[in-house]
Image (cartoon, rainbow, N blue to C red; front, side, top):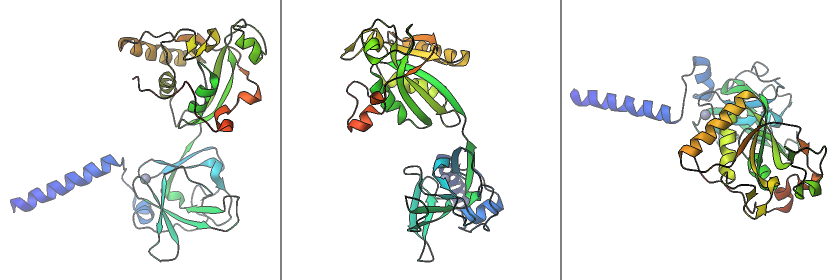
Length: 300
Ligand SMILES: [Zn+2]
């Protein structure tokens, strides 16, 4: 009897640990019918079938991000349709019917729907047919940030790949001259820094996490230089948009100082940002190479 009791307690403990590890929430009976028992909601009844808002679709059961609104299209089939998934978020497997391909959440294995190829709906020729009830839509909350940390090619390249970043643009700020050219900024006389303007989805990444990442992709202890690039235009600087960003930036600097770093990063109120010449945008993507003086180093 006692053995049985220990076994039940042990099993319960394992179930709870597994649920916690996968960050699963408890499901309603209707959600269970689809997500666990692989049912299908009736067509044209799901709440996201016609949703056209910008944002991200997460797994209802574990909250993992699965699809972006930019990949959603109107297929007329009655279920939300996407022609692409967030990389690695969705797993395909042969359906129990032996015909179709089932799609499940890669993190918690919750049932999402099926994927169909070759229907010619979009260029990607793929349709993820997903039950609305398997999804939780998180609307986009666009915010802006400006960072300077050496040659903008590398800073832009690494920030652009960060989860939650919508766009990263290379440009100039922090100087006196209006509409400066690259040559004027390179002379060091215009007072501008090579900088990157980031638009991010604050519902996917916080300003704190973004600014922390910025402090880890350049060396914040170098004064008026970054690796081989020397001059005031290569200084480390956070241009805050509002008082909240200023507080976050100063807190990060304080943390680094407490860890023994001699931080050179300035924290300054954002001024006008001038977009750089087009040949500076997406430089490494166009060149097909990696940044020469920026890479991720854990500092926090
Ligand atoms: Zn999941």
